[in-house]
Length: 171
Ligand SMILES: [Zn+2]
Image: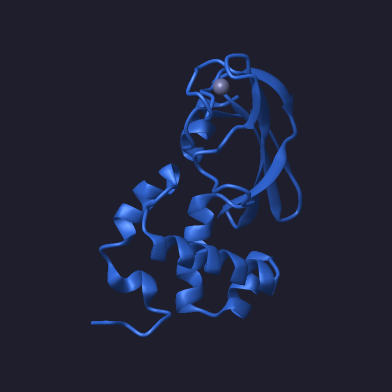
């Protein structure tokens, strides 16, 4: 829709189709620029799109408003190995409902504030904030194994021992 908006959003192969605005909330409707993706089972490129069931993903707030991304969740059929698969998003961990950068933000916030405080500021429940913190914490403990999208974020964070200040520090 808008090249500048896409650049600000800064997510790979993604464009903003439209947005809606409510009182304190902006929802951006996203579209992916690649129609064909690689099958995770056999590595053949060019699965056939079977269906799209968009999901709402929470992202970092802008201009004092909370942001949701109406994100395609696309299911493909691979004609080569005849299997179905769901596209993995490079900016959202599997089965999460928050962008990686948002989870990273919440993780850092919880360490300098409290779960209650962040929950109030972010309009999310205590359980949701605690869930994000736990998810990020377990990722950091595991290092970058398995999550391609996370590995770049982790490589910036791991050297800083500060990421585990919530626990007794080994230094
Ligand atoms: Zn396949």
